[in-house]
Image (cartoon, rainbow, N blue to C red; front, side, top):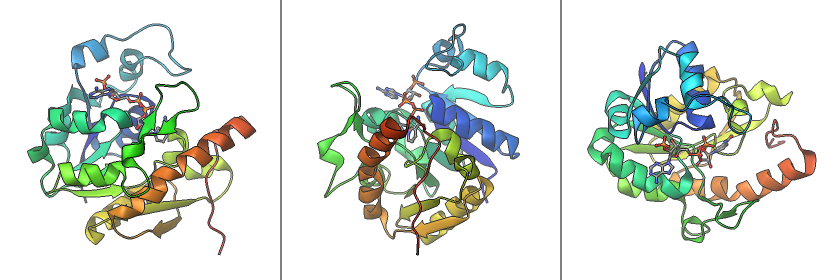
Length: 229
Ligand SMILES: NC(=O)c1ccc[n+]([C@@H]2O[C@H](COP(=O)([O-])OP(=O)(O)OC[C@H]3O[C@@H](n4cnc5c(N)ncnc54)[C@H](OP(=O)(O)O)[C@@H]3O)[C@@H](O)[C@H]2O)c1
């Protein structure tokens, strides 16, 4: 099992996953386009979360580097970048740095250009998905889609929902999915369904419109989906 984790993305998801993994004893490097600028973000809170610089002050064991430094460092890599920019971030990270590694894709192909709520980027839906494009961009890596269907605090603490929600994995490599399931267990997920190969990511990404409407209707982001069977 990997001891070194690379995280691409310094938003709420990258930070929440990073701090939880560090707490669990993993070595973590988090990647951003410009480490100096990102670390320099201090002061008033953004969207209810501390700025990156303030957050990092509380999590100094986590290394901050470029996208390629984080990808190179990780034996396992989490993709936590803005969905519309994920393929661009992978180019910066350098596809050869992902060779033979398990890559957990949490990103969602959302289009915020027309305001809230966002819509799905059509090129990644129905007969395609962002995860499939990531797998094509990283042919030597083992991409697994998971965790994208819940709020980031629920990702690392399934029981925060007050119940035992279902989480899914989809990917081509069974061994990589087993590694992801181990991490999911450490995040409190006990009900996990394997949706098969990476095309299973289509459904997981298309769940987002339901997630967004549920959030709007309940004004509560701490929920999950349950497959009752
Ligand atoms: N927020 C949630 O609870 C949640 C839940 C489920 C899934 N997700 C998904 O998780 C992903 C991360 O979400 P988030 O809210 O943490 O952050 P976000 O604001 O969606 O993304 C932030 C990251 O994207 C990178 N980025 C933006 N434009 C870029 C570009 N042109 N090239 C390269 N990188 C670029 C930023 O890099 P820099 O560090 O260089 O600025 C930053 O690290 C998204 O795909 C989102 O849909 C989020």
